[in-house]
Length: 167
Image 1 (cartoon, rainbow, N blue to C red):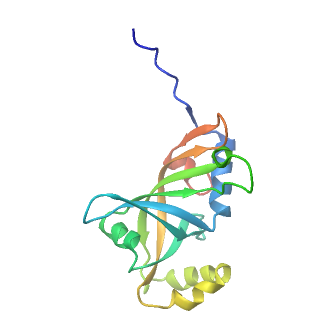
Image 2: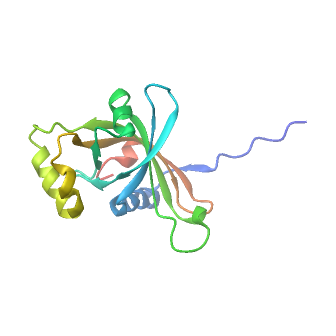
């Protein structure tokens, strides 16, 4: 006899889930990024600095020498994990967002680059050392969908519309 199917633990996003997702992204100074290596096709996870652009979209300043940057150039599909585990208690009870996105590289000679650079350096002063190096570039992440774990029994699926700035 087969067991009855288990109910889906993920709920559709509600206003509270959307607000928590925005809060996690706005408070994130870094993220774990998962990509597929172009040569092997195997997954790679790395840490990147993270902020939001003027539209509220996730943004990072990355080195062209990094494996994750080369992977994003080959295939822009990626996943960002944001959310701090907290100072004590079970780290799995703290909210976290697994954001599926597509990377878009910002042209260093494009009209928005200087504004992004100024805003980034105002928040990340130590980046001044390498922000002008020729291999560093901004990458914006366009959300596609996400899984939000808001704590015990609070799991949500967010759509692209749920993740749009101002949603």
